[in-house]
Image 1 (cartoon, rainbow, N blue to C red):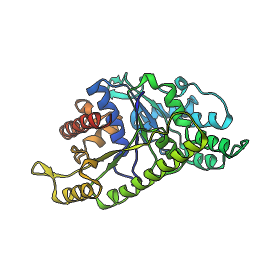
Image 2 (cartoon, helix red, strand yellow; image 1 turned 180 degrees about the vertical axis):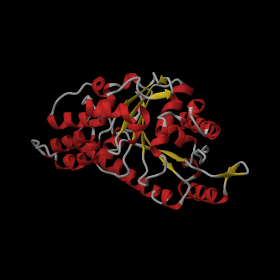
Image 3 (tube, rainbow, N blue to C red; image 1 turned 60 degrees about the horizontal axis):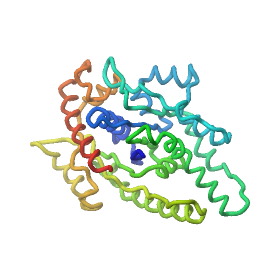
Image 4 (cartoon, helix red, strand yellow; image 1 turned 90 degrees about the horizontal axis):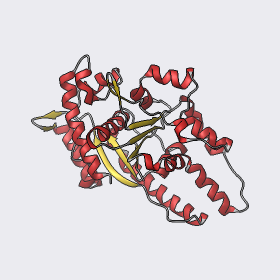
Length: 313
């Protein structure tokens, strides 16, 4: 079974999507892991970043190719969808002339913005309340069911979640073994992390109760907190600058020292230069500019990947 991880922060601009892609790239290249990426955000940023905008447009709109929307449409239509029809293989860019053979992706779709309302309205009548609870669990299991069907094909599944707790995000949490919070060391990025933890505790409690009441086999498996990865950290003298260090230290004091990844990614234009040509920062030698900064960020990202590989087990 793969380790399934939701990447979540309700604050935008924290580098969540970039970290998700780079964790996948690093797990594949540094640890020979097979990784499935699933883009749940209607902004489609992970999809654009991973395969390139033109390829995404060709696949999704010109060729009417399958996306995450296809999976949910099948749920509404009560039809069967084959995972191989929605998972793109050998499309995630590794270098200027190469794609990853061990990183696959389920692309997002901009029409997912309407999906949560449609899911909320979807009510299936049962013979009794217990059967209706099973139908509610089925609604939460759309993504989990797809992952379960390809469980032998991957070591990790990384879910790039939208910045909210709607039913699409709850689908991701329900499928996940862990959730990880990307953050930048500022007040607005970190102030909501404890709230995310409270929501997750409540979700686990609610899902466990629903599972038991529905009389399903086995036990509900809780989604565990995997930690906070700090991104865009300014350094001075070999460590974070005072202001950033204070926020990182206070976050660790609030949530516990084990909640914070020891390694982090520095600020710089290397990752943005890589993103502009749809490459991970590890391909710094292929970039038209900022190669030195990209190499530095690639080294920091490599340490984050290695720590992730040790922590998320």
